[in-house]
Length: 86
Image 1 (cartoon, rainbow, N blue to C red):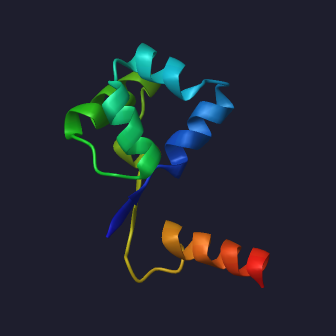
Image 2 (image 1 turned 30 degrees about the horizontal axis):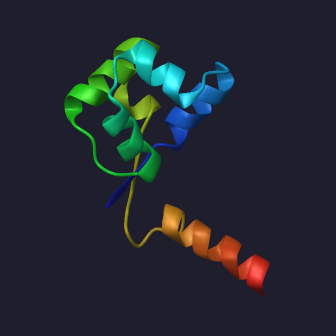
Image 3 (image 1 turned 135 degrees about the vertical axis):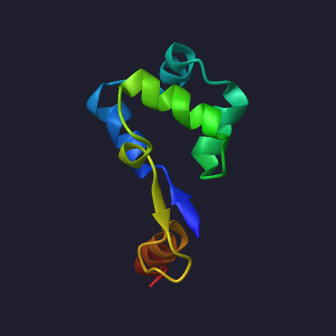
């Protein structure tokens, strides 16, 4: 299983926030921001800071994607590459 932070990025766009500005305001380190950008795992403390900043639940900022799910980020990227190369 993988985590998708797409919902978080949508929130940033909706609020016209840059990632670095968001991280500063939410109290998130640059290392955690980098992990989010790579789709890597972050600590529950970081999730809680984000949720507190947006006044939301974790499910509002992250989605669990099953590895064999076609909507997994890698699968979408591969499909996009196939369209470009294909």
